[in-house]
Image (cartoon, rainbow, N blue to C red; front, side):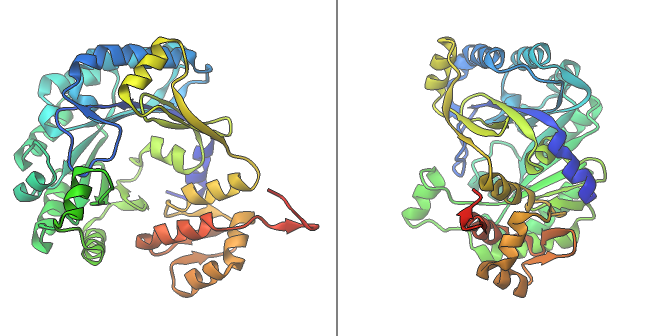
Amino acid sequence: MTPELADSFIDSVAAYVHIPFCSTICPYCDFAVVAGQDDLAERYVDAVVSEISMSDTWRDLDAVYFGGGTPSHVDPVLLARILEALAGHHGIAVDAEISLEANPEDFSKDRADLLKQIGFNRVSFGAQSFDAGVLVSLGRRHQADQILISVNAARDAGFENLSLDLIYGEPGESTESWAETVERAIALQPDHLSCYALTVEPGTPLGRAVREGARSPIPDVQADRYEALEQMLEMERYEVSNWSSTGFECRYNLTVWAQGQYEAYGNGAHGFRDGVRFRNLRRLDAYIEAAEKGQLPRAGADTIEGWDEEVDRLFVGLRRTVGVAHGDGTRALLDSDDGGRLIEGGVIETDESRLRVARPLMTDAVHRSVLALQPPIVSGKSDA
């Protein structure tokens, strides 16, 4: 992944589709999801199709990403309706990346075949761990052998772009357990890996349990897990939490991190189009009711322009290993006290053309410094 290629995704256009339905809600999950409401799936898809029809038409989409929730939990025929609506309203490029997230227990051979026929060409499995105890603690419904079965089903169906999600740092996880998880993931020969530290979010069952005295993830241990992962993988890391074989970087994510534009459909979905970052209503019933009334189901929107656009460019772009090209924002950061400390600590590095995060585990600290930047003063006035 060269800087030029990564930056070129600013010209990409994409769409995110949120599918909120799950069989159960994992204790750590803070997304806009529901369980036990599968009877609303058809009505929800009608609402998503309606929302698509209300959005401004666009050029052919370069990437489409179905996230959740659990898209694989829903009847593929319903997902096909959404893809058909996107193709009819915007168009989908012939070589577009069309992804969906899936849980191993939902992914049978028949379902894999049908999803491939519908048009999906990339699947991302929520494997999370190959340790039975860790999977139980995370509230997952599958066991390790089901990951292998689902991967084989996807390959047999013709999926040539396959990703696995892993979570590290669950308090009961040992160093040996994590190493085995990574080894077993590598053995499945995925094209892409996304690996995230277990995070305790307020308001989730895990957050409440920790507040009441349950064990919490230890940041230093999670850092050790991340560094062990880096040493074990032969894939290229192209973003803080994402690794891939050459050419298998997630195009939807690259669009987001390059400050490219992407539509967002479904409850709680976030998008960025024509300089506006917008978010949809989070509650499922509120989203459906708005769409059924012919109203765009927006919860809010922010226009990104002037100095905010430059801060936004750094915020999303510094997640990438290639970093960002120099501009007013990078110069402001390097001239700031925070920037000086980050350079001195080896957290960020710079050359004549770009600024990068050299210590990915410190990316959040860099983001805080970016958000604290003040616009430069020109002739006694802010250019914001």
